[in-house]
Length: 196
Image (cartoon, rainbow, N blue to C red; front, side, top):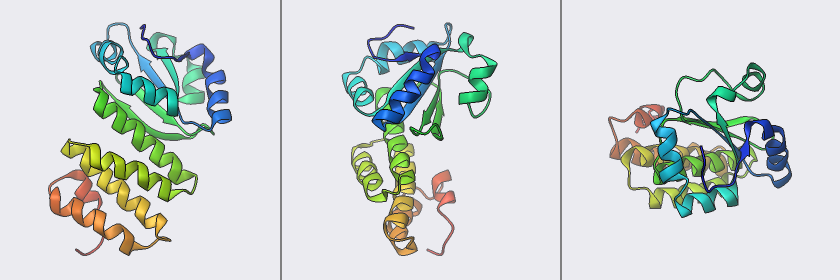
């Protein structure tokens, strides 16, 4: 699928990972299919959004790969499991370890949230929870969707735990807000590991 965004092809995956390593940016693999309506909408709506293009160009290395070109060797080397649906997105740290994955069409605001959480998780892996916390705080302030806000609160708690020297007290305000604001959510259930 054609899009105005800059990307590597599947055959250029090695070069893309090298660039990610050199620039210390995360890498995103977008696997799409010819007859996939969500994939087509990613190209005509999401990747065409100026904010998405700028965000990817500033913070990610992008590989776009047609599902027909996914070989056994590619799967063995790059994919954590077999594909079920497209579009499928896999985010990697520069060292090639998986950070996050998502499946299905993502409108620009959701895609940017996924990419930001991926960057925050990378900062966490780098031992920089304060940097991750800044990314998540910005995302929490910008997000208008309850499902995204729930996940961001969860990760803010995790980042605060590590930024506070593995202090549960640092985590509590975020997870308390999550549990009080979204008591029936899956994220609140995940955060239900200590007394209120």
